[in-house]
Amino acid sequence: MPGFATLLPRPVSVTEAPGSCAWPAPVAVRAGPDLPAEGYRLAITPGRITLSAADPAGEHHGRQTLRQLAGPDAFRAASLHGGLVLPCGVVEDHPKLRWRGCLLDVARHFRTKAEVLRFVDLLAAHKLNVLNLHLTDDQVWRIEVPQFPKLTSVGGWRRSSMVGRHDGPERDGRPHGGFYTTADLREIVAYATERAVTVVPEIDLPGHARAAIAAYPELGPDPAAGWEVWTAWGISTALLDPSESTVDFFRAVFDHVLDVFPSPVIGLGGDEVPGATEAHGRLLRTIAEHLTDRGRTPLGWDEVLDTGPLPPMVIGVWRDGAHGVRAAELGHDVILCPEDRLYLDHRQSDHPDEPIPVGYRRTLEDVYRYEPDLAGPRLRGVQAQLWSEHMDSVRRVDYAAFPRLCAFAEVAWSSGPRDFAEFLPRLREHHLPRLDALGVEYRPLDGPHPWQTRPGVPGRPR
View 1 (spheres, rainbow, N blue to C red):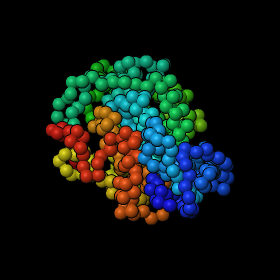
View 2 (cartoon, rainbow, N blue to C red):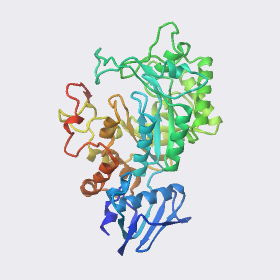
View 3 (tube, rainbow, N blue to C red):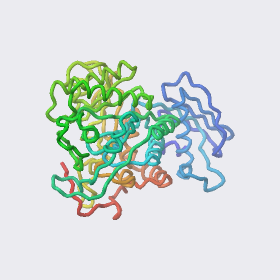
View 4 (cartoon, rainbow, N blue to C red):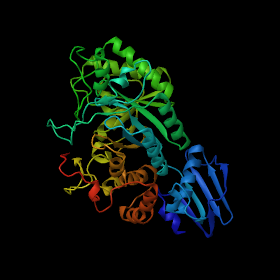
């Protein structure tokens, strides 16, 4: 049954059988109480498809596998011919890790609601189950909070953007803005839920908060300083003033976030806080406790471990594995998202045509060969990151994400040994045509198309 060898991610077990089945075809769905969480079993015979699933997520994953087996045309928005053919046999499958996530930064460059919905579809097609939506930063605030309208009317746009990644004064002179209404975000959450994807919002504090300070200067260190939404990339030194009034403000902001997002995990940032004091740590701990009191689990970057005693949290470990070990020893769950391995905004080669070359060189093979350096019950999973300073269009997001996100999906899902030499022909022959059918403008395996380059725009490679 050659079709089963094409799956991304790979199935746990496959039993071949003679014959084929026309598709689309009716699918009989049954409960699968013997299957692990998100697991499914597909039994395909010439006249019948039976899908047993542990839960709704398992049913979704099984239906994605049927699309994969049916071939690239099954990923098009409309049927091109009368029917496709599935090979017969049994596939039984379940994921290795509970959290198979991708962070999409919509703060530095806005992605429209339609583009976010499309990205959810792409995650679901790869059986990834978490969209970590980075909604606020120094460069813009993207979530409507009706109680504080200036967060979007003032903080929701900037007058210009830095060109490339450098420390010079060059800006593009083009205003940039956009935000999501409450109804937009409820729609995104509902759409993702139907596709077995949980949307985890992130509201960053006490740093990465200059847009909020520009909107409400009393939140910042010097209300008379004339703060503007930042037009540079990097890390602003403007931190929230850790006063009781600031705490009250963000309690109200997070109460709105909790009303919009049913996710059991809520992100509060905590990273890259230059000049942080004990009072800034107390602000973050207070908000973390506020989330815990309301039945949610806070998610913070690994710097939060230095702020003092914390309630049980999920820690996003982005610096090195030692922080993951420390987090687990302190009783926190861990998401591994190392900058030097899983930041997909980083450059993909050393070739001079690579657009805006920043960060570490991380190839498709590098991502595929990543192995989590932490094991045990405290490891929830892994997450890739798409920081968007240099992704000013959905085409640039496609280029940075794919096909490396395909390799990441297999890392997060598939158990047992993996072989890049076996993966590459599956990707090239079977999965890239699926991306073509979906309209994904991925990076070709041999380098960018001419229109995917950015000649003359400086980067900052490491």
